[in-house]
Image (cartoon, rainbow, N blue to C red):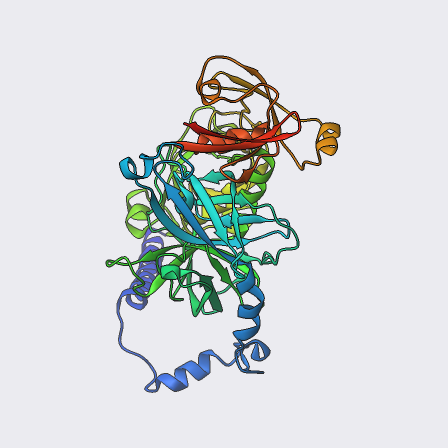
Length: 476
């Protein structure tokens, strides 16, 4: 009996050893291919591989003309002035504090004058001038800006303007033809063509003290140069799929690759700035890193792609939903995320109080939670920019609709009360209705706040006092 049991045990061990050895041999020993023709191998493996012949067939020659003709009238030239005010009452201002000028591009996105551009195009500008494709000029008001995405929203007083229709940057594919339209080197309405080289690129050009920057660029090889910033990246239907923002270069000029902010993110940022004057960022509240082969080995992960959670912030949306350090996030709202840039883009499209579905892997097991996003302060509320009704000793209020009709004005701000300060020193009178600052229309106190925040040096105030036109110069 014992002898039979011993024989059976030996036989089983031999069988297991043979199987293990075979597996090891198959896995680690390469005896060379069993075929001698790569083409035959490809044909064999592709026998059941179907190709969308309609999609790849050249039904007609590629046509750039239609998109260029459609979009070019809606791409504008933006000129900015930095330093002392353009309308200083000090005769020596220009000599003592000469103006610095810069330029870029912008895209009209509504028929009534809203324009998207890059934050870095208008950053720290005292005055913003917009030149249309037909050479009409307007002074623009800054509605809002967001350094974390390098976007800004401008408004000019105009109607029935051509504008570029939003497309869907989620649907673009690598290799797809695109056009870049802008004003490089002050060469108005320049159109260049290229293909989408990659998506969700993070090139580390945006900085934020709270580390909230979002870089998920569309990379293209369309020629983009200084002055193109803020211009349009469109598909061959003439739909906006991105805002050109950066180039990869060691010289300052185009060197093969350019990068655009995807329009799916642009749309959300523009709506935030339009409604609230500031971006409403929903945050998970995690410190994260790209999953790499090295990180997967060090952390004993069973995946080599995704977003590794290094730390979960206290009181964050992630903590409330049960995410933990060591989790690997692989999808947001059923959209797979291969790295940090993709995750940041999908989450940045949401406001505080909105929820995202987070799919993650923990200890080799895939799980899913619903996370309600919070803002940087840890609240689920959206917050409008504060409107100040007292600025440097002057108190302001919006003009009533009936009064605007009576005076035939589109908008304005009434000086309600004056105390010692810059306004009173400049000769501003109580009851003055301010209609323009540096030639930019002021419709309400919110506009006044935005205008004065960007001023430095000489400022030109225009308005009506008891029905009479008034013009006052003020040092700011």
